[in-house]
Image 1 (cartoon, rainbow, N blue to C red):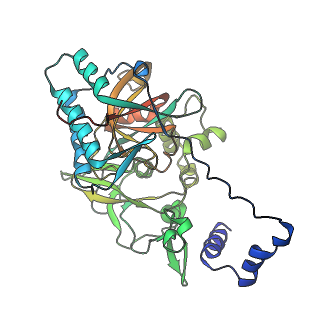
Image 2: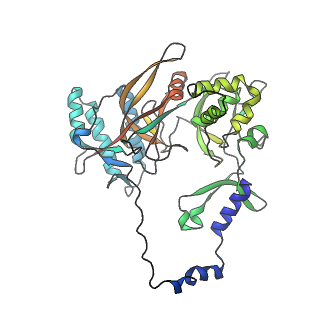
Image 3: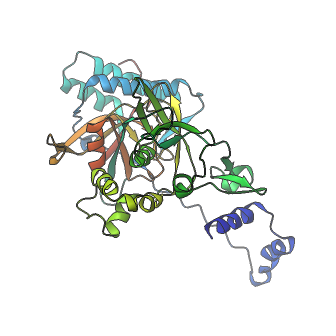
Amino acid sequence: MKKVALRLKIFSALRPLPFAFCLLLLFGCAPLLEKPLAPKPPVRPPQALVPVSPQDIPPLKDDLDQVSLEQAVFRSLQYFERLSGKRTYRFGDKRYTVKEMKDSLVLFLRIMKSDDPPGVKEKRIRESFDFYKASGRKEGGKVIFTGYYEPVLEGSFEETEIFRYPVYGIPDDMVTVHLGKFRSKFRGERIVGRVANGEVIPYYNRRDIDAEGALEKKGHEIAWLPDPVDVFFLHIQGSGMIRFPEGGFMQISFAGSNGRPYRGLGRMMVDSGKITEKEMSLRSIKKYLREHPDEMTDILSYNESYVFFRIVEEGPVGSIGVPLTGGRSIATDLDIFPRGALSFIRLRKPLFDPEGEITSWTGFSRFALNQDTGGVIKGPARVDLFCGRGTKAERSAGSLKEEGELFFLVQKKGGKATP
C-alpha cells in the first residue's frame, strides 16, 4: 500500500490538472465574492540564529588541544576556497560572503596561534567577533546534542565463512528524481527509487536487501564483515575504517541512501519492552541484538533506511566535502545553519571507568566547526557531535544525549583579517 500511495502522490504532482477542473477553480466561486481576497503575507519562519549581546557571551573555555582546532579550521578554509564568491551565509538578519567567512577563520587562527595569554586571546575574540545563538527549543535556546563516531571494523575483500555480511556501494539500478525539474514548487525535493515496468517505484528497503537478498551477487560489494550488527551501525554512523586480516586498512564514507525514512531502534525497543529507558544506549542495544539472534532481522528491519558507501583516501568525510576532526566537527541542519562556520558548544560529557561504565558527567565547552549533517538532524534544536574514531569514541557517542547551547561566531562587519 505504501508503494501505491507514493506512486499516486508522484503522479498527481507531475500531471497537469484537467482543464475543466482548472476553470472551476478559477471561476466557480467568483459570483460569491464582491471583491478578490487580498493575498496573505508569507509567514516568515523564526530565525535559527539570534544575536547575542556582549554581556551574554559565555566564558570561551576550550577543553581540547589546539592542534585539533587548527586542523578543523584549516579544513573549513579548504571548503571555502572551492566556492564561488557569489555565495552568501545567513547569520540572523545579516548575510556574509565567502570572503568574509574565510577572513573570520583566518583572524580566529591568528588570535589562537598568537603568544598572548588565554585571557587576552578571549578578549580579542569577544571584541573581533559577533556571536549568534541557536534559537533551539522554545525554552531558553537549548539544543539536544547527540554523538556519532567512526568505527574500526575487521573485514575482508572476499566473502568467506566468517566474513559473510556485505557492505555495498551505490547500486547501478538506483535513480534519484529531482522533483524541482518537473514543478518549481518542488524545488529542492527529491525521491530515490528504481525503474520497474516504465515507472519509478521506491527503492528496496532494509529487509529486501539484507533478508531477501535483493542486491545479492550483483557486484556492488565493497567489503564483507563478520557481524550484521556492525554492518547496521556502520550505516548509522555513515563512515568507517575496515581493517583486513592480511594487513592494511580501507576508509569508506557515505555515498547515498535508499531514500527510505530513518527510524531509530532505541525508542522502539523501549516501547516494546526489550530494554528499559534507563538502559537505552548504543551499548545496550548491541548487547540485546547479539543475545537475541532470532529477533535480529525483525528489529533491524524496523529501520527501512539503507546506506551505501564509497572508498575515500582520507576520512571520514563530512557533507561539505572535507574530512571530519574528532571532537571538533559537528553536524547540524545545513539548510538553516552556515556551512563550514566556526561555532562554540557547551554541554555535558560522560566519564567512564576502565570497563566502559559511566561513572559521572562533567560540563565542558569548546570551539567546533560546522562540517556535516544527517538525515535526522533537522531544525534549530539538534546537533550531532563527531566524537572521533574507535572504542572510546563509540562509548562517548553512544551515551551522549544532552541539552546544551550552540553559538556561531563571525567576524564583525568591516573588520580585517589581519588583527
